[in-house]
Image (cartoon, rainbow, N blue to C red; front, side, top):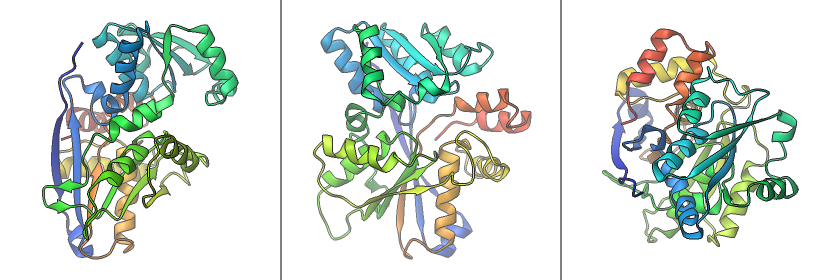
Length: 323
């Protein structure tokens, strides 16, 4: 099935603190008719789907946590393309009151619970070999869709040229590394010029010491030439998927002020850190930053399910779209 092309939009974020720092911030938002595929989700899956169709696989098999945006996206894209989807979920039991897992099952995805210790093996070749042997007619899609195919899908985006001109910096939230790798690929292909992008910044929302190495491997595999990039940790003091009050407050204020929903696990957390960096003078006056909103708003329902946000915050963050 052909999926309609995403609808892309740029938004300049105008605030006194940005003006005072003389930093220009542009958000790039990408939406689709199927909300679960908005942001970076379809871009990371599109070439996996093409390979499934070319090689005539029955479907895909993948991994994710119980509130995973990736699992929801895989469930959605599998149903749209009428292929099978299997997910190994990091949980002791499949809780179908969980809105993410309920959605996935409703789309026809087969959910298999695996404990945390087993889940840690998801990147080990021996374990992956067992999964492939168990599902030989399914394409194995890595956690988060972060393979070379996933990165190549992101590389189709142009975050270099904002409506105001060439960006100095491209930034985004990062968890599994595929989106940052794709943005580096795209930036490295841009025509060289005196005002070319100076660096790509991945704002890591996970405490993963291997994240830099994962991105490096993807770039080497794709034979990407050297390009300046770095990973900045946002979650050093907080576990992944936890929501400190300051992140929740920031997301609610940002959404109210700009009419663009952000959530406190990925995009909101990354923007919060980016604002801190801007306030600390880490970007030269006159810098133009291009920030990629990676979507993931389905996760807001999961935050409410776990009582991490209150009903008012849920209504605000779930009723406003990402651009």
